[in-house]
Image (cartoon, rainbow, N blue to C red):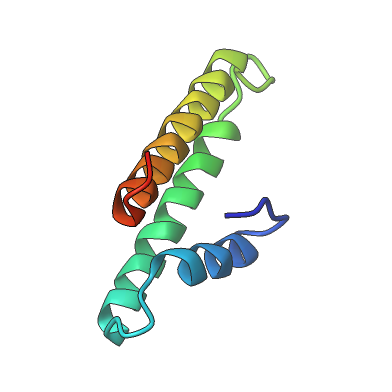
Length: 84
């Protein structure tokens, strides 16, 4: 999944990479709702300032969660392809 400048572009990239072409419409809709809910929650976390500024430890924690998740995705894809 590539970096993007909007939630909509990130969703389109995610959907193209992660949702099977034969997925039912309800799966697509449910995944879109979950994707946007997660994005909105992250924005809420990042825009809840502590003493008028963004909390660096929170940003670092979110970044680490992102890195961990991306590693998990990469490992899953490698297992599905049968590569180490």
